[in-house]
Amino acid sequence: MGQIDEWTDRIAELAVYGANVQPGQLVAVTSYIGKEELTRKVAHAAYLRGAKFVDVVYFDQWVKRERIAHAAEESLDYIPPWMSERLRHLSDEHAARITLSGSQAPEALEGLDPSRAGRDLLPYLPETGDVVNKRTTSWCIVPAPTRPWAEAVYPDLPPDEAYERLWEVVAHICRLDAEDPATAWAERVAVLKANADRLTERRFDAVRLHGPGTDVTIGLLPSSEWHAGDFTTVDGLRHTPNIPTEEAFTTPDPARVDGHVSATMPLELFGTSITGIRVEFSEGRAVKIDAEKGAETLRAVASKDDGASRLGEIALVDGEGRIGPLETVFLNTLIDENAASHIALGNGYESPVADEADKARINRSRVHVDFMIGSPELAVDGITRDGDTVPVLRDGRWQV
Image 1 (cartoon, helix red, strand yellow):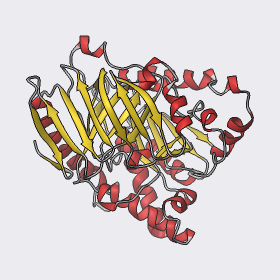
Image 2 (tube, one colour; image 1 turned 30 degrees about the vertical axis):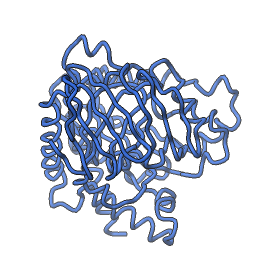
Image 3 (cartoon, one colour; image 1 turned 90 degrees about the vertical axis):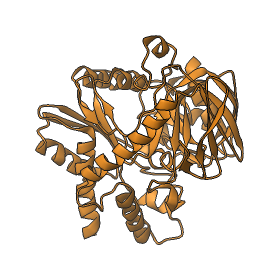
Image 4 (cartoon, one colour; image 1 turned 180 degrees about the vertical axis):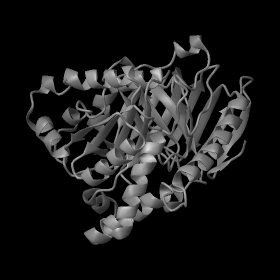
């Protein structure tokens, strides 16, 4: 396990780099039972960078199971006020936030009523979207392998081999194999931002995604820009919210989405697995949601508020990253969404929208749920304001 110990050190350092922890800054870590070693190393790395205090919150999917199975129906939406107050305080203090993703127990919610499971989205908090849009915190999400997660991804391997294999892959896609992973990510982000800049220059009125099971046209706001790789806080602090990241994304016009989409990968939604998703959109709203498994969970999420059934994000992913070529379903949105183009129901990001009038039009919601609709067979076109069609992605390769 010596190699895994080294990778654990490196990804802890990368998480702190991604969040760009500053001397004197508060650091909040969201973790799960089973990730204690990496959590402690994140705290170590943060304190070495001068963190004022590292506050860790652990979640346990087995405790969540007890709530969904037995709590009163009307209480499943309840969020303790101190959780939201903590996030607001972190925002007020311009803290750093680090999340360790990856399932602690993929089977924990099996057999439960999916409509009930869709009402409890913790640890996601409804204030998260507002905090992101205020740009008051620097933040980073990184994958943290666990043995149960590894066994779910590689069920045909013996448990020890599955765990080692997942770590090998995480090291590869997070560029832990580079001499300096932080520098490697700075170089990769520069490429992603160049891709995004080329898309922004075209000023498309809409994008159309079409291929097996999907044909949808997504309108863009007049001042929608394409972003990638990193964010900047109101204090000018650059940070990398997702490691790994392979996307160029923007915020669409929530009133102009028409067509249908089919998911190309399962969606892991805070402990619930949803497979075979198909969604139909009309005038911006998801009017029909089906799935082979877990449809009621996604329907429950999409009914959280008025904006939960509209789009807050469209992200394009080419075939040049390290994730897609692996042709592996990781049952983890952080990784899977960077293997394929995707959309998100719910809250939209303000940062890719330049005009204040357009910012007022972006989708608002208490949720933000990404799911993957991309594949090498998915074609993406840009539609100009004159109605012309311009190829954007073909066979996973940029055309602009």
